[in-house]
Amino acid sequence: MAKKATAHDAQLILKLYDLRREAEMRKARKWFVSEFWPESADDFLKVANAPATQENAWLRQVGSYWDMAASLVLQGALHEELFVQPGCSGEMFFIFAKIRPFLKELRQKMNNPSSWSNIEKVATGSKTARKRLELVTKNIENRRKAMAKPAKKG
View 1 (cartoon, rainbow, N blue to C red):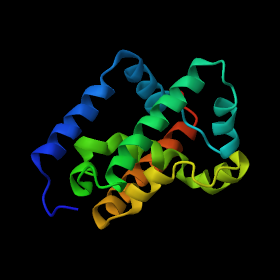
View 2 (view 1 turned 180 degrees about the vertical axis):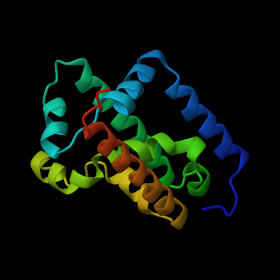
View 3 (view 1 turned 135 degrees about the horizontal axis):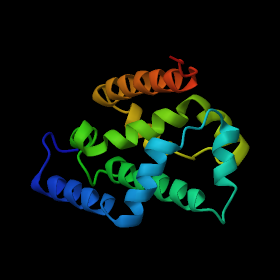
View 4 (view 1 turned 30 degrees about the vertical axis):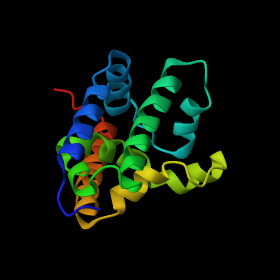
């Protein structure tokens, strides 16, 4: 990998950003980020195993988009340190942190040991990425705790 990001890397980041702006992708991303809060592998599989639903399509769309982007990094087509910056891939870290606690079980139940592996490799592959994942994971944990607390009356 080149020591510094190149103009080609910048163009690819901008192209990836542009793809995220497509109308259906925006809906899928909004659903995954704000509405989809699986607590277990089974929660994830309820959506993954319901192929005729919109949520299933969105799950696959968001997951495959970030898997594709991560594969560009892993194959050396995109500068890793540029990609792991929050403005470039913050959302990837967010969605990965949501499923990471039960990823091993998910892979077993899906009989797919490589599921989410490109994302995992990028999200844990450098010191910068690991720090980012740690921060996002704490934010996800806090969000889950806040969502689990009953609303106060008064």
